[in-house]
Length: 410
Picture 1 (spheres, rainbow, N blue to C red):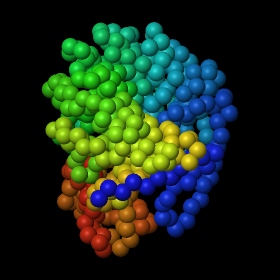
Picture 2 (picture 1 turned 90 degrees about the horizontal axis):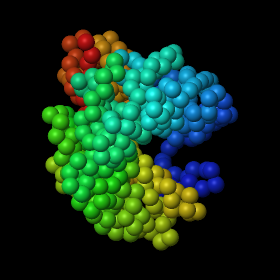
Picture 3 (picture 1 turned 60 degrees about the vertical axis):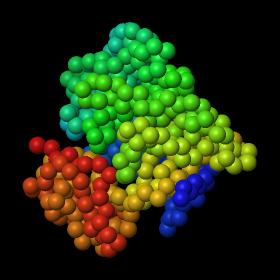
Picture 4 (picture 1 turned 180 degrees about the horizontal axis):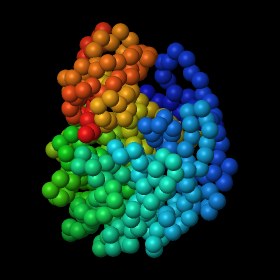
């Protein structure tokens, strides 16, 4: 049984139906223009415990910043973009296994068509690549670090067909264009991949395009390690159109996402798609009178460790200002690690539900020393002899398995 619960955003306040024992909301800091303005993307917590993000505009050059903020609320500019090294950073950062942060800018660089950059936690920024148009332009999405140590991403525009690209870039900045969209007749392979990629457990990369496909309403695609792009699904309107957010791979191994428009009630959809390409529409927005459930979901879903999905809509709700929703489809609880990779001896946070009383933590079968911090957090040390694989936690209610493999670095 699928259950959708709605929380509405109105008047700058948030109302969300969640059962919690205590709630404390704290405004850590406010942007003032000189340290950035309009931070579109979410934050990433680095291994050093600080949070890092990007402001789309502002800073001392007015074209955006990278900032860091401590959990206690001390905000500082890590770097000001200046145009030549990038501008308008719209996507969130990722932290690589090498400890550095990597990201993209929508503009700036050599010919003002966007960049890929690396920044150290201390603020040293290196422009790894400036897009020239022929190899893509306007990367809007975050990178993904694949198991081979290289980064993969998309550009929303550019390439020989002007409809975007898939690219690979090494940590030292060697970029290879792997695919140019709209390479097939009538753009049946898709066009304008505004969202980022994910690497699934089968090793393939998965993503979406805003347009193109059999009906010019967007696609879901798979990109294989051998370099073949397969359009898994072309949206037809009745099942949604214009998927803007990235996909996620859930604990059941299937992929989940949203479409911004159309569906049975014209308000967008939530969908599930198997790696083989079988798509199921899980929810059609504007199913409730006057769009009380929301409309136009353009963000990426997140799966909480209790198995439930959470997301947002741009419109609908009590005052048509958007909603926050949860969707339960009966998936089982799991644990996730923060970070998802590390060397033997590294302390790792394990997040989950009902962890109090846990009796065992293993990394691909190797027993680890651990401390139960709370009902939702365990700290564990990557044990000697651990290999890349699943993390398992034995609790009083059963065994919880990590949703992705933990990579043990050499």
